[in-house]
Structures are given as structure tokens and as C-alpha cells.
Amino acid sequence: MKCEHAQQNIILAQYGELPDELQFPLEQHLGICEECRREWNALMALNEELALTPMVEPSPNLLAASRMRLDEALDELPPTSITQRFFGNAFRWLGFLQGAPALATLLIGVGFLSGDFIARYEAARAPQLPRPVILSNPAQGAIASVSGIVQTPNTELVQVNYNRLVPETVQGSLDDPQIRQLLMMGTKLATSNAVHADSVALLANECRAGHSCDGSDGGVDSIRATLVSSLRYDRSAAVRLKALDGLQPYVAHDARVRDAVLDALMHDKSADVRTEAVSLLTPVQADSSVRQVLRTVSSQDVNPAIRTASFQVLQGSADIQ
Image 1: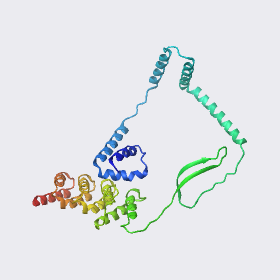
Image 2 (image 1 turned 90 degrees about the vertical axis):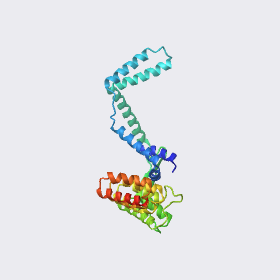
Image 3 (image 1 turned 90 degrees about the horizontal axis):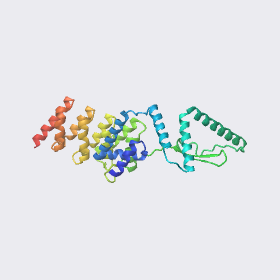
Image 4 (image 1 turned 45 degrees about the vertical axis):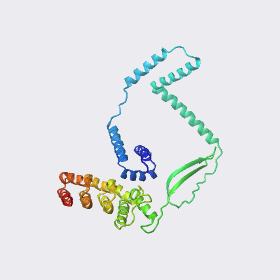
């Protein structure tokens, strides 16, 4: 997904209008694109600020005074044509009804009862047709959604189009592209926490075993990018720890993976994840960005063991230099 499309999808996601099939690619893109992630965080902060701002309703006195000033301004207008006066009087009459809720309610009630009586009369005189209910493939899964409704004119015969959820199973090797794609989907669309954790664990084991963890283009569809997203955003510390373990072979030569590990060391709430992150950064301790983060952690982390481990890795980098 390109940044241009991601920016549009971020806005749709904030308003809850992003289609489900675009949720996963957007999350994957946010995991590797710092600029789009800043845009996402900025919109989240803006929505939180707006939610804290109370909505002020105009007072009844203000509304009444505004109507009076409007009426006076209309009276001061120059003479108009018959058509304009007709529409003006009609709108003024509607405004009068808004100021007289009892009369408006009475007129609406009379209109509703008259319409209901006429509809019932026509329905009673209409010819009665048989009402069969026919289901196509009635035993193939639960109904997921209704996609269309078509009524035969002047009858009570209705055709309803609906979609079913049909469970399916596939079996194959972990090297099979379809199996891998389903496992990556399992990290986002699993029906249970256990399935979600198993998906991340299997993908991480594939990477640790030295199997290819890149997609066709090495982008957001790769196993590596999926593990980076899990490390950054997953709520479970155990899942984040497993994702971190799967990324170990790529810390040395993939800057995106290294940045994700550094971010976990700085900000992850789990001490186990931060400890493992320190261990993974040992082979790249000579990198300037790694040393900078290790200095910060060695002096500011709330966990004494992590501060000590970071300091020891820094000492090792000093010996190398």
C-alpha cells in the first residue's frame, strides 16, 4: 500500500468507514511507515480532544429572539411577486407550527391516521396471494448478511438475497503460500486468542528456522512485516515476545526490524520483552542509534536488571571500538 492510499484509508478508518478487507493492509503499512503512523496518532489525539469538548446547545431565549429578528427583517423586504409571497407565507406558516408544537402534533397525527386508514383499506381489498418461503441451500452455514431485497409490484411476494458463513479447512506445508497467507490473516482476524497466538508462533518459527520470511515484494505482505506489526501493536506480551524471537535473524541487516526492536526496548510495558530486546541488540551494539538507545535505557529504565544488561552491552561496544 502506498502512502497516498494509506492517508486516505486513515481518514476512513477514523470515521469507521474503512472496509474490512483494507484494515489489515493499513495496519501493516502503519507498522513500517513512520510518517503515516504519525498521521494516525495525530488524528487519534485530535478525536480524543474533540470528545472531551462539550457540545453547547443554544438557549430557548436565543432561538426566540433570532426568530423575531428574522420576521422583522422579512417584513422590511421590498414588495415581491405573487409566487415569492406564496412561498414566503408557506415558510412562515411552517415556522409558526414549530413555535406551536401542540398544533403541529395534532396535524401530523391526523395525517398519519388518514394514511394508515387508506393503506389498510387498500390492503384489505387487494387479492391475496400465497406466501411460500423458499431457501436456497438451507443447510450451508449461518446467515452473515442480507445483500438485496426485491418485491414483486402490487403483491406481498418478496425475494431476499443473503450471504452465508461457510466454514472451510485447508491443509498444507508451512512453505505453501496459501497456508502462510492464512496464518498472516490469523494474526488479525482470529476467532480466539489461542488461534491468534498460534498464528504468530508458527510464523516466528518459520523465520527462526531460516525459511523465507519475505512476500513477493518484501513489503507489507511479508511474514517479516507481519511480525513487526505484532511486535509494535499486539496487546499480548507473550505474542509480542514470540514476534520478537522470530525477528532475531533480521536485526543485523534490516533497518526496519532494528528500529522496531529499539522501539520495543524504549516503550514496551513488558519487562520480558524489553529484556529480550536487549539480547537481540547485542550483535549490533556498535551501531550509533543502538548505542544511543542503550545509554537512555541504562539510565532511565524502571527495571534495574534491564538497566544493568543495557550497560553491559554498552561496555561490550566500547571494547569493540
